[in-house]
Length: 252
Image (cartoon, one colour):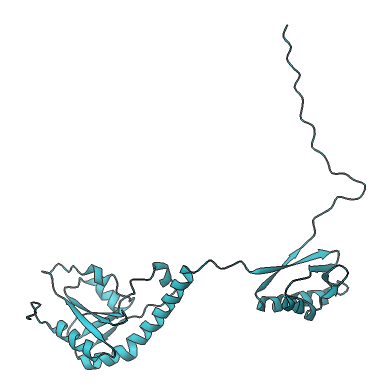
């Protein structure tokens, strides 16, 4: 069947390039539409912040080609501006990833190649595609994290001051209890709590830091608290004054 699309240098280049790249690729040529440069739906998906992006920002694209691999990877092909022959090749962003998944990911900037599809295929294979694969893996990891359930709040261990002594309720986890013991806390079996004496404040501070480091490795944070203040003996809490009682109105 005759192909009504006229043959162009770019179209021919892209078709041959698709056959030279490793894997199964197809080429789709998007011709000039009467000088309207109406290819925004494609150029908006170009994943680049370097030479290709700069070129697209400076001039409209009259015609272009898109190469698609069997796994969905897409490459954008456009004329290289200026004297001489050559083309610009850039990766296209995956369409199924949310915009937030691209945050913090370095764009796999495109490359300029000579008008030789055989050398261009090598440049793409060894230069552009490795950067694309790395960026794509980061985007997929971000997307999976965004789609997953919200992360649970980290477990916290409360150390409460009792005068100069730190008291910790006996934890259910043996690894947490072991971390406290290694840091110098002693188990008070009668009360079922771990205590850290304050006889030596420097030693006590070092023990708290050591416990915090070990517990952090276990995914447990440390919270230091003071017990609630109690009223002094022989005193009573001040009661709020009684509300005033209105005198009933009497009629004559």
